[in-house]
Image (tube, rainbow, N blue to C red; front, side):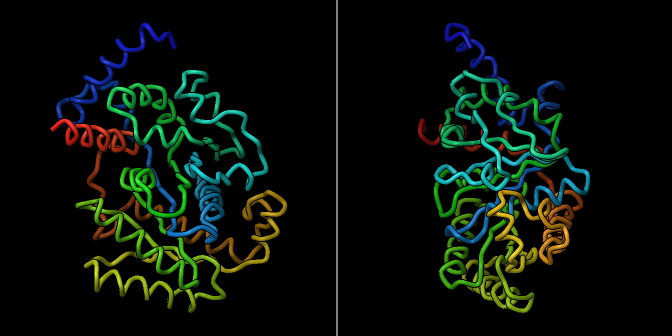
Length: 314
């Protein structure tokens, strides 16, 4: 983009977004561009819990239910989504942010209904952008509102500002843990950080991965649910579990997601069950999860930046 004309474009878009954040009436065109896509952030307290594998296979399970899904690799340190699909994307979000590529140029289609959006370091910049830069980005990202139904973000492990920003901007956050004591402890820490940062409604669910059976998964879930009720005054919903499955290991080695590698694997049914729970949570709503938010991921991410800017200036 020509750097001479870009400031004028930024100012025009920033004005529209300030109206949005202050709940003023929007033009139909702008409102249509920023509504419709549901977003899910998949996160964990520590690495090695199979988070990316869960994100990839849930994307495929939701696609099998005829949803168009975009999988955004938001792990700023160790991007794994492309490896799990056996592809090597040439460009990522950083190229879009630098004006080198259009957003459509970086989207990599891996199945009929699933696409990969390589994030790379561009995601860190997106979360930390000021209001004007983010308003410019939403114009470039807005095309996907017409092409996808669900956006899944495979975030990094741990508790970092960027990860919290993505999670809080999503319609739903999924915390992935395993029976390991350190994974249980760290997943509780992630939940605590999310609750402290949310300061209000938080949509989050718990998935226990790599379990020998459902009984073990329930024991792990009960430990986290009990601790969150006792110390955080919050009961995290349990979304289900994924079995420790040799087929998953084989699919990783073959660089092909389990749902594409071995549809008869025992864990496939568990991925599909969690996908159904996700659908009920973000589309139909649960009694305690009324979906009253009318804005979407990109817009909520921008609102966070605007609010940060207001605090800094004020």
